[in-house]
Length: 204
Image (tube, rainbow, N blue to C red):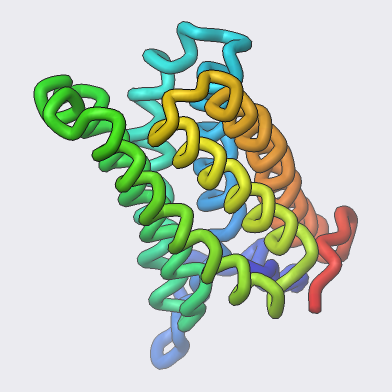
C-alpha cells in the first residue's frame, strides 16, 4: 500500500506498446479511502454520535467498504503486495459479511450477542497479526492497525459483556482509525499525482 512516487505512474499511457507490461496503478488510495469512509459511518453510530449512521452505512458496507476494497485487494495481488492484498481483500469481505448480518436479522438473532462477540474476536485476532506485519510498512499503517486492533477489542468486549460504555469506546477508536486511514489515502493519491512527497507517511 506504499505509493510509488513517480510521475510515470500518474500519467501512464492507457494502452502500452507491443511487448510492454501494462502499468498497474497503486490501489492503496482506493482501499484506504473505502475502509476509512465505511469505518467512519459505522463508528459514528457505535460512539452514539449519529445513531442513524448505522443504517446508512449498509450501502457503503456493500459497495465501497466491501466491493471497492476487494477490487483494491485483487490489484495488490497482481502487484505482488502480500500485505496489501491480504488487508484489502479481508476487510472488504468483513464489510460484506457485516452487510449480510445487518440485512438478515434472522441470522443476527440466531447468533445473539455471543455469536457477534465471537465474530468480532476473530477479526481482532486477524487485525493483531496484521499490526505486527504493518511494523515493516510505514508509520500511517502502523497507527491505523494499532488503533483498529484496540477498536475491535473494545467492540468484542462490548458484545460479550453487553457494556454500552465499552462499545461506545470502540466507536470512538473507530473514528480515530478512519481519520488516520483517510490521511493514508490522501497521502497516496496526492503524492503520486504530484510526483513527490507532499504528505509524509514515514516509511520504514
